[in-house]
Image (cartoon, helix red, strand yellow):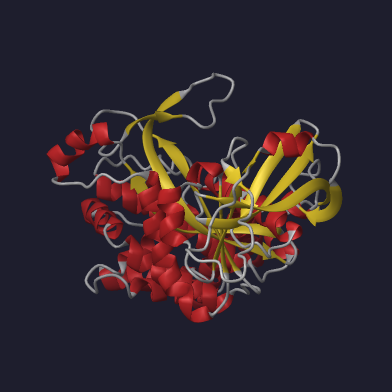
Length: 451
């Protein structure tokens, strides 16, 4: 059965896709690695509710379903190894630019039932019109590579995630899975960042990290601020900033001061009318906008030294950002933080396009495996579509009311890959059988309906 499905899966997929999946397979055991391309192609072809069973049916699997559930569970224990291979693949095939930009954030996935391991009650970041302040499910701290496409601007490529389990939910999980160490979101984030720094160290490029103010705390920054790493984040409006330390006098004894003597009030700095400047920057969606800003240097105990502060005046009020590199330009800081929105788009896509959280698994390792499969399939589709023209991945002929020049969405890229897979399958049949033109036209029409 393994040989049968292995050949079928590789015949359907494009050549570059097959090579990438084969590279990822090297991180798995030889006895079960042949299941990975089947699961991935099933995710691409699946329609409707995206359960694991739907994946397997779309891939043509008709028996031994339980073996695939065990395979996904084992995959959840090897996420670091597969993510390492995936990151090496991206470094090899994509232009990273002068610096490497990484984004960090967390997202919930709704689940139902008390038997879902690792699930708990969490605050809902997107309560919506129903104003649901809490939801029951999982929280995933996620790390992504952020790139700017020459045509489509910001693209997020998720790599790795960690499941956050509340301390009060650990007893239920440990009753089923044994000892499980509690870690805060900051600790989980630090683990992933240390993991990625070890891999990217050989590039010799500066690494920039961007995340929201919820992660800009001392326990995380203390572990990740090593030479060559720069952090950009939002700054609390009541941040305890101080001035720069005074210069040392000749022959002065004692240690060098780290922080200045005077406190800095961001509210007073923002209220002062003088000192504002304007700059044109590329923000969300590649749009050029003019921002009004102030910038200055300060010392911050959370970082442990000097930072560059940027205040931006908006119609709704002022916002504050900081960068741990005092020599960074205002344009780099603002554009870098604007790219953070890409990871939020990733969360939207993996839920709306790939159905993250709908896989109907209870085992905690199966949940981890399913979530990472959704992350990796998103990244692989973006990698596959990176060098393809707009005409090959954006077909809106069936929607004349839509803007034909609009940026291709992730759903458009997945649709293009699905269409390519089905056409490859049909071309493989043409080699064996002579098919009349009427059937060819009918098949092409069916492909359009299927995708």
